[in-house]
Image 1: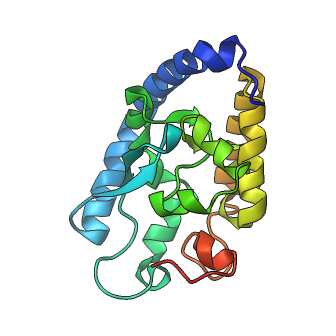
Image 2: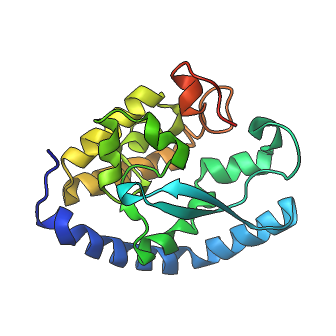
Amino acid sequence: MAERGAYARWGKRVFDIAGAALLLLAVLPLLLATALAVRLMLGSPVLFHEWRAGRGGAAFRIVKFRSMARGPGSDLLRLSRFGRAIRALALDELPQLWQVLRGEMSLVGPRPLPLDYVPLYTAREALRLSVRPGLCGLAQAEGRNAVPWPARLEWDARYVERVTLRGDLVILARCAWLLLTGRGAHAPGEATMAPLTSARGGPSAS
């Protein structure tokens, strides 16, 4: 059973609004510089939109800076050195700070995954849908995309079971450290991670 203390019930949202607003002000020059770099290196469009599962499984459009070249080919082939760099530093995720302010996301929580993953979750894994998806989460703090799917989904479930301010601060600090070291940006041989279906032995997702 998820713990629903004062922080989980209302304090977390206050923390999200204050934290996202301060971060947006702090990184505004970096956000603009990244947008310009994407435009120069990859062309238009600068932003990438994709439907993901939010709180309660509701669909919302996640926004990122584009990191892949347009055209045919696998994600791995279309991911340039520039794209790898902005992903390693999570610069592609900066526009999601606005989505935290809007209430679609949280600073800390399970990363939002594609809608077609939702039917694949076990009952325990589906706990991740009971909170807002986050910019970073416990699974990311454990190693970002280098964490295999079973462990990643288990870490997400454990996070939901105990949501606290101290826990969120620790997760943010650990994720920041991983970003500074550039570790875990992708699984071996993948642009990010293998699709959940193929990782569990099913057909590969496109």
